Every structure is written in structure tokens, then in C-alpha cells.
Length: 256
View 1 (cartoon, rainbow, N blue to C red):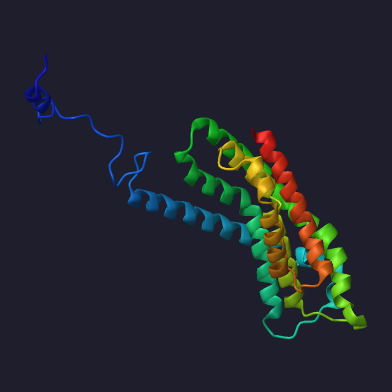
View 2: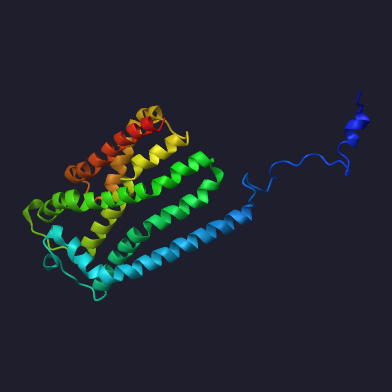
């Protein structure tokens, strides 16, 4: 029969109590806060290096990319440059977008690699397998912007009120690059919700119940991204957003 003294003796220096799985300053995967910050710094440096390489590579075809992106307005001849540094600024902006697209798979990998240590092995598989699909969906959003949204929006904007507009080079490319970037990001939402459903963070029921918030958020994002808040341009942007939200609900169903 054990006594109280036996229990005390069991926790003496000669018989230490079992250690906890992690200490107060340590995460469940054995890394301290400073180690997490060091890991985050390393990932960010890799992302910045990859983005820099992508931008440098984009310099080689930025001229052709600028001409290609100017087609929805009828070519560069229908644009005007006013400031002396405007052409260089547009060249750098387009190169930055091209560099981001080239580096996007690396950016996704580094973000996911920072997050997955806290996931189960089965969950890590789904997250890593999503990288190529996330990249393709981003590119699909960029293509949708160029092939569908710009041909519909640009003629309406430049001839609004019956007054023909000759846009500035920088204004046009700011509009186009912003639209391409954000639509590309938004096109990834179905796959993101699929992953979140796989991780048991969201469910299809939760998404269906939140459809009113989805409409409000879509309207807010459309108002921020589109250059005007007229119903035509907002509907042009909101329609694919709401369609992607419905697709997200279906993806969440399949994830279960």
C-alpha cells in the first residue's frame, strides 16, 4: 500500500516527474516564439528573393506584355504619357505583376511551409497538393480579367456620356494591373474554402448561412477595385465573385 511519502519521493530529483510535451514559451511542434520569428524571417527573405528574380526575368518581355495589355483599349496609340517618368513607372509596374505571377508558386510554397508544421500529415498532403491548382486559378483569374472584364469595361468607360476619353498611360495600367491582381486572388477562393473545409475550419452550411455577408463584401470589394461605382462595372465584378462563392459552397460539400 503506497503512502503520501511514497508519492512525494516519486517526484524527488532522483525520480523527476514526467515532463510536459511543451513548455509555456514553446509551441506544440517544439519551436519557441523566437524560433518561429526566425523561421518567418527566413521564409519572407526567400519570397522577396524569388519575387526579385521574377521581376528581373519579366524585364525581358515587359515591352511585349505592355503592348498585349493595351489591346483592350486599342493599343498604346490610344494612350498618352504626360510625366517624364511615367513610361518607366508603367514598365516597372507591369514587370512587378509579371514577376509576382512567375514567383507565385514559390510564394505559395513558402507560406504553406510556414503553416503546415501545426497540421496533421494527412492535412499537409491536401495543402501541398493545392499549390499547382492555386497557381492555375490565379492565372485563370488574370485571363478572365483580360478576356472578359476589360473588353466589356474599357469601351464603356472611355465613351461614358458620349465624350471620348484618351486615358493616361499610368492610369490605364494602374487600373488593369490592379484588376488582374485582385481578380486573380479572388479566383482562388473556391479552392481556399475547399482546403478550409478539409481542415474542419468551415462547412458548407456555414457558407450558405453567410450568403448575405458574401453579397455585402462582394459589393464593397467591387466598389474599391473598380474605377467607378456605376451599376454596370459593379455588376461586372460582383457576378463572378458571387459565382465563385457558390462554387466555394460546392467545394466545401465535396471536401466532407
